[in-house]
Length: 141
Image (tube, rainbow, N blue to C red; front, side, top):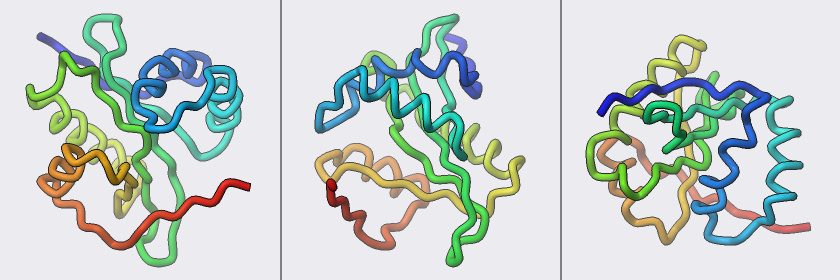
């Protein structure tokens, strides 16, 4: 199989909605996701996709910012690869592409959050050299 990694164009951002819906531990209605991604693409956000031919089979959001403790960084968000494509080294290849993309864009570090219940992702990120620095808290207003 031959896969392609690329940044999803702003006008194609809605193609990721079905994958984001599979990822969420909590359910966000499609209409809300559409509204939120419409805003996000006009902020410091990009989304990378994995394609098998013309079919999108994986995604990863990228938030670019500068932080006092890590310099210019990218925060990896909503990483998802379709079940049928897992366990084949595709995640490792995707992250290699993401590391390079971040470096080309001047980033000094990569950060991410992962759901507490997603133990497979914890193992993956540890193997990729990520360290836990703290907890991510959320309060709905």
